[in-house]
Image 1: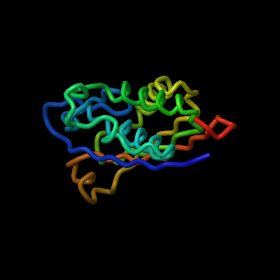
Image 2: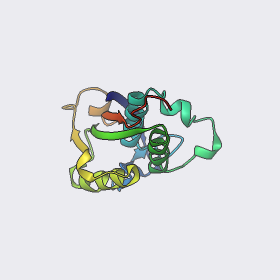
Image 3: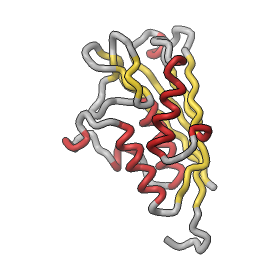
Length: 163
């Protein structure tokens, strides 16, 4: 069994939709990025990749590659899980937190859990998502961006120890 941590942050900008956990959250700004800039899914992907020792999302899905421009992060999450599963790594659980002063995302958390669990091929109970503010401190508190942190536990099902 192994554990990984992921962290991501994106700037809030006018003219982009706000996508978190694959949910379009109503807000007057969205996150800037090469893909859909889903900061929550990005943090989870980095936690999963780190737990299995497979680097980070920038290594697998570079923002210099046109094929990832505007892509749904849920599509990338599924690719990460397939990569892990093909190498005998299975998800134990994911625990994540979104750090944003606004908007309120608690009404959307259950759908985020459902979306992410579906793409990872696991029960929703294995995906925990929380939200917090920074009490108006720092970039998130000033509404300049949104951050997310995630921890993932994976375990290897290859009893022989060889891939």
